[in-house]
Image 1 (tube, rainbow, N blue to C red):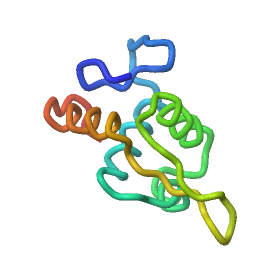
Image 2: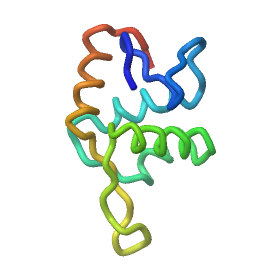
Image 3: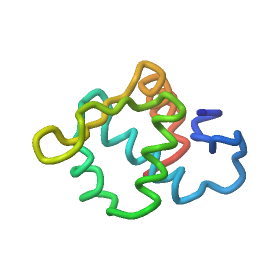
Length: 99
């Protein structure tokens, strides 16, 4: 959920911005209006639990949609949903989280 430009945790709390939330903002900015492969996200942000949790959080919130079956022939890729594009636009307008 985005509130005042901050992507909140699935529990709706803000407080300090966690690494997962910062990663989620970075992912949304990377994806923008494109479809981007998971490999590209992990190469940029790191293949770590924070990246995994941020991707799951964004999908759970309905901000990202995953396409592809995964694996060599049909790798996972992500694209922003209309809700995700709205959240990204709010981040850009408010410029509240510089990443």
